[in-house]
Image (cartoon, rainbow, N blue to C red; front, side):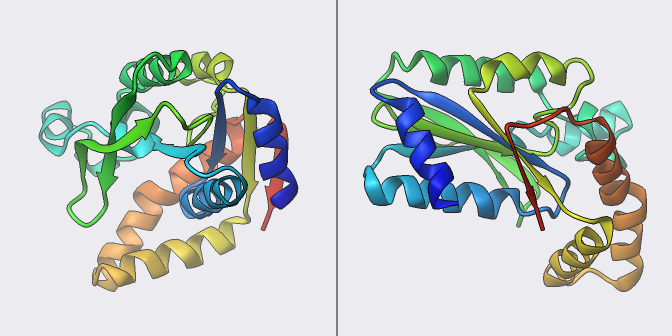
Length: 204
């Protein structure tokens, strides 16, 4: 991991690069993104920032109207166009700082303008399930990434991690099983089957 952080600093130079970290739900994307940012900033303070794809979840009320509330987190429940626009805006780096949305898992809602990414951040790490998906409209994002990373985690491990996550939110065993079998694991299988090749593939 330190070697990857060094490579990102070198690739960024005096400009800015976007690094995509993709993987199934529960694969450890957020943890890896935070670690990468920490390693970069240890050598270049304020030179890295995170843009979570989850900030572009459709709101629950909209999902209810679309009949997709039960499948929140599936590929068609995100504002892919809005996310792509933000990536382009960040790549341009023409502003002193850009406010980005962040998904609040405690309330299951994306909070607009919850984080500022300053101009000084030369390495933007963006993480999400579908960043390398080969299907439209996600496939159009590929040209916006300078470096790609995919987390390859066995389904059994994903299940264990996701069960632990939902237990932390005090869901009943029945509700956890429902979320796993009807949403999380189908999404995970799609990510594993339909994601394109990455520059770096990390197993776990």
